[in-house]
Amino acid sequence: MKEETDNTGFFEVVKARRSVRIFDQKEAFDHEVVQKCLETATLAPNSSNLQLWEFYRIPETSPLKYKLAKLCMGQKAATTARELVVIVARRDKWKSRAKANYDHIQERFKNAPAHKQKQALSYFGNLIPKLYSKYPLWSFVKNMIALFVGFARPMVREVSETDVRISVHKSAALAAMTFMYAMKAEGYDTCPMEGFDSKRVKKLLDLPSGAEINMIIGCGKGLPEGIYGDRFRVPNEEVIFEK
Ligand SMILES: Cc1cc2nc3c(=O)[nH]c(=O)nc-3n(C[C@H](O)[C@H](O)[C@H](O)COP(=O)(O)O)c2cc1C
Image 1 (tube, rainbow, N blue to C red):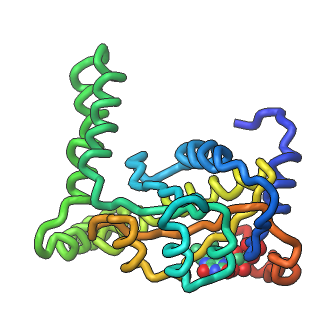
Image 2: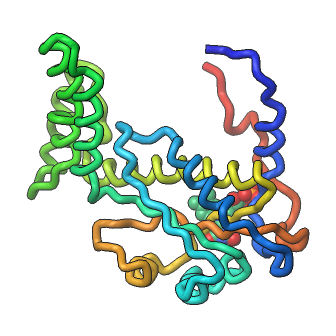
């Protein structure tokens, strides 16, 4: 669907966003903007709409801020950030999120014929539990099923436990990206980070063992010296192909 809209603002935001490692300490920082941008980030596309993500806001006033910045290996992008946002992948919450989708579809299809209702509900009632349940050897069994079914017809191959984890992280990263563009559109800068001690971060945030830290994002108004060099990308011909 191609709509006639003015997209220049979007492309400007994408071009203007940089990973900024030093944030201004003087100007007022509007923490409400972080909340607004995270609410926007929840609109990101995500696998099966399970929304297996959480976002933890650690503003400069939080008693956790200093400790968390240290756990980001003391990176300036964290120590100078006016707020840190921890993007958490919650693969472990699949049951409740699948139920939320199930209930939503049940409501949507309540006046539909029984067979249509059954068909619509089977995705969250049957397929998702098969993919996300954890039993001994289940990951291996899923791989074998995909292998054998795949001989006869096209089949999704990424069904192992590792694949499920990757899928949850993919979705969380899309939310992170949406958040960073939203922040830039609001005139603020960000720096995504994977240089952190995930074990200690989980402990600091009191997260269960099933939660995984996807990314930590430093936020603020970037200083010019916080941009470490010109933007560099390999040539488009090396990465964009038409077949
Ligand atoms: C998943 C991920 C992890 C990153 N981790 C760090 C990090 O720990 N520290 C850092 O300074 N930059 C980090 N970056 C920023 C990248 O270095 C940066 O995006 C890249 O150099 C391109 O620069 P640009 O974002 O300004 O276009 C990370 C980026 C991503 C997407």
